[in-house]
Image (cartoon, rainbow, N blue to C red; front, side, top):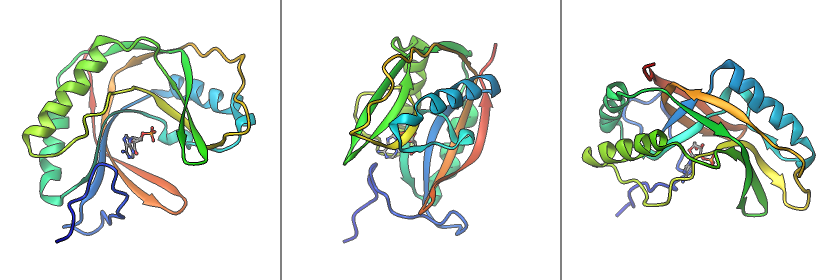
Length: 195
Ligand code: 2AM
């Protein structure tokens, strides 16, 4: 019997086919000024090598869903459309790295995660479970990935002290297609958090 897709599944999907599963995630999108500062930080990290995330793809994941069967995609859209909440401030002041095989992912994140961010994550998690999606139990570690496949042998600059103030108000449901050239993102729905 074929195994159901899991959260870590990298099965290729073809969103142009109506019955094809879609690889989805909820994210916060930076506005122009924050995006520029994140991009500057990517330039400051150039010495670490690797592949910077294209500026237009920079985001903070709220919840990764993995492959979602076509008949559930509308329900996920409805969840995104129904999100009510107020915008909130977060400060991206910590640089870090996740090891990934023989390389590193470099990210920037908040040293203190605002309660509103954790609440949003939990609320999305609860709602997608209600429609029968399985999401992992891993601890939520909010971050913006800046560089993929950074060289483990090269140190990232130690003197960088990011201090990016972000009033998060753009929440998006994004479909990601894995291509040999990298991920291709398509925003399926964007919702503004209120003032
Ligand atoms: P990352 O930036 O740390 O890789 C789309 O892949 C987004 O979902 C990325 O921001 C990615 O985080 C996040 N994500 C979370 N869990 C994931 C998983 N198991 N597989 C792929 N992406 C995941």
